[in-house]
Amino acid sequence: MGGGMRSWRRAEAALNRAFADSAAGRYFKVDARDSTFTRELRAGLATFLTMVYIVSVNAAILTDSGGPCTVRDCTPLASTNSSASAGLAPGPGCKFDGNPGYQRCLARTKNDLVVATAAAAVVGSFAMGAVANLPLALAPGMGANAYFAYNLVGFHGSGRVPYETALAAVFLEGCIFLALSLLGLRSRMARLIPRSIRLASAAGIGLFLAFTGLQNQVGVGLVGPSPSTLVTLTACSRTDPATGECLGGILHSPTFWLGAAGFLLSAMCLARDVKGGTICGIVFVTLVSWIRGTAVTAFPDTEQGNSNFEYFKKIVDFHIIETTAGRISFAGFFQKDVWLAVATLLYVDILDTTGSMCSMAEYGGFADGEGGFEGEYRAFAVDAGATIMGAALGTTTVTTYIESTAGLREGGRTGVTAIAVAALFAGALFFAPLLTNVPPWAVGPSLVLVGAMMMRVAREVDWAEAKEAMPAFLTMILMPLTYSIAYGIIAGVGTHIALHLFDGVAAVYAWAQTYRKNTITEEAADHGDQITATKQNIAETATSSV
Image (cartoon, rainbow, N blue to C red):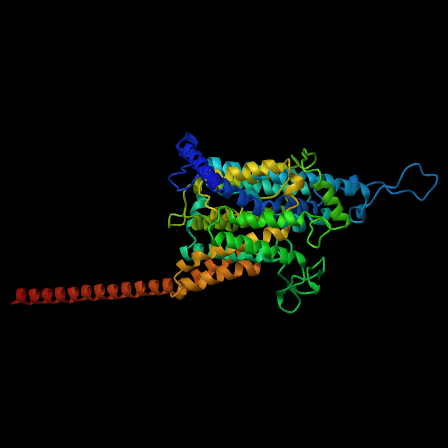
């Protein structure tokens, strides 16, 4: 066994050395960033496993908008008139009453969006690695997809903006963002954020990730909603499927205890510096959850569970996008709701994405101490370009994922990590039945671990200086409590400006006082000179008279 391990390590070292000495190794600066080829691959796998949930989650959220499905896709209603030769034309209500034709359209749309999500992640992550040489992965972002589906298009198209027009809004926002990036304005905006806020943003994002990992939808379900205290301890055996509120059996959830076991396994591996420690817990929990007939199975004996298991059994499946790609339409674009959507998406991108990217650069050691980081110009351009491509495929804003910190924790420091993520998402296009069934209680523990690791930058904040500590604290605490990275940054920057505003006013007042004093002194001196001159004139006049 020991001889086999030594042989493996020698082979790994030889592979790493060969790659580092190659043209690719020099391009990606593997040696310069103190990394290795195999470490980059492990980092890519860690990042991929923590964000692969987006393939199914994004598709499910966007499908709720109805996508391109309309009343025309509904099955005609059976006529009550026996003499009628055709069914009745369905009304708008057919989109909400389980009409078979509309449901089939939704199923096609969801399959399309699974492929669109994975394809967007492939192109965006590959470009980030190959062009910007950064270990950051991209995919359609959470938050923007919910705004798109539930606020803009509306549930099953019940909103004010059609799906095609909403995609045009995403496309235009991406174009504006790309222009800002190419002009260098985006990086300048990032530099305007004070360093204490940037540091607090990294820690706040860690808290945000941990809070997400503790919830039910993409986590272990340890915390949930409470009508009296907003959040409370749950992990219940029975929950309200609509609200997630606990209905009984606190800490009796079998999936929570399995997720907790995965958390301890990963934490023990990380404490002992085991390579790929974050991945160990995810793989362990996922494999156990794939066993049917247990209390922790990802495939319960329900209609949805049986449907998922039938898809899971395919193992390999490839689907070609049929309905969502190329649906961008500027018809009806010039209305208030559409422009409001463009402004909202742009605002979220500027604060959310830029803040996340700068925070991860701080965490990964790429920051230059002045608000920038190596490769930022190309990274911002890639991020914006990926959004344009995502809209063309039928999905929402593509963004740099904060789950990339899982790869940073594994030692990822170059673009090889992002390219590895792209390769794995490309594989997901073929192995979607497996990868879309990684349960949330397998992903949640890794998010908590990553959040804990990101807290280390908080120690660099000058907590003894209130003007730095208060904005930093608000930034950190409001990110998880408002469930928005952007709101945390706004609160931090706003408080920073307010606290330093007095200093600015005081400085202006002091300058004004000094200026006034100098002016009075100069006027007095001038007046004295005039008196002296007058006296001299009088003396000269008197002398002349004599």
